[in-house]
Length: 332
Image (tube, rainbow, N blue to C red; front, side, top):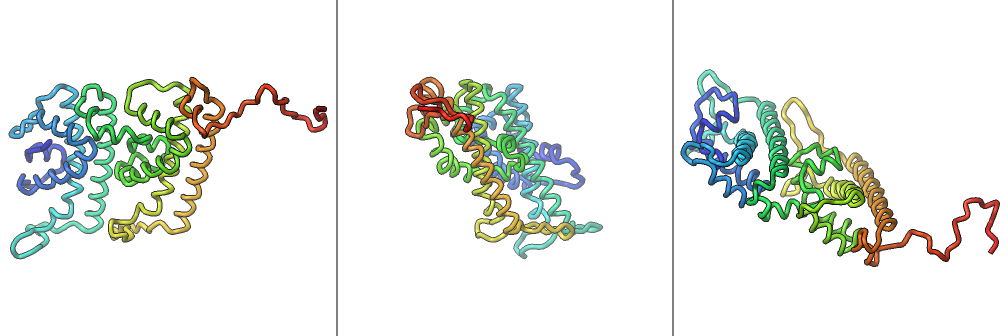
């Protein structure tokens, strides 16, 4: 694993004032790696990075950037481990069943403290994960195990490939990795149901391919891409909004910690947000459509120009000019 020793884990968590045994914490580290780290960076890069970690001493043996990436991942992993273990670590398990651990002169933390700690660890882990992915993106040339992996292809084939990118076009996401993962399926659906019919199959596939290459985009292409991403971000959020606080059993989920009550979003608020995002997505989709129709040619957006979706907007040579003054009509 990326973390194999108590000392390494302690140095990441901070504030450790009691004994920790690896046989207790190791399973939480493994769960956090499987549930969060591998899903984010892919199995290929994870396996490669393991070759740069001494499983006995936890010493790092990679290049400068490889070691820097592992350190960032370890910090992220530490916070996810704390999040995953917060409840289970309080419970003693044995043949006699479950019991709350209450050592002498100590008491179990209150519910508000447990919930607060889980929330804090989750937020820290999300922030560090986004920072780690940004580092990986910046120095991707140094990590061929990542750029050649299926995880890279899946992530970068989306027009909104990360929480940071989603936040750029829809600030309410606030770089939350957790929220982005919850919305990613709706991004995929919105691309197929909303963006594909807008661009046409040829241009849609051409741009999808461009996302996976390092070819530069022209200023006009970037303008169109920004309009597309804003429309997509709003449409995907509109689609996912009613389901974000439902669990896998379709039960409504809300957090109550004993001090702060967080009400479930009511129908009126959900409908208001969906209405706003629906208007926003439609506006930017129309702006994108007008841009494509106005600028498309045999050399600019050629895939769209050759499709049935293209609608010429320029006046033909045989058409009379537009009469802007009704008081002076043309005489034909």
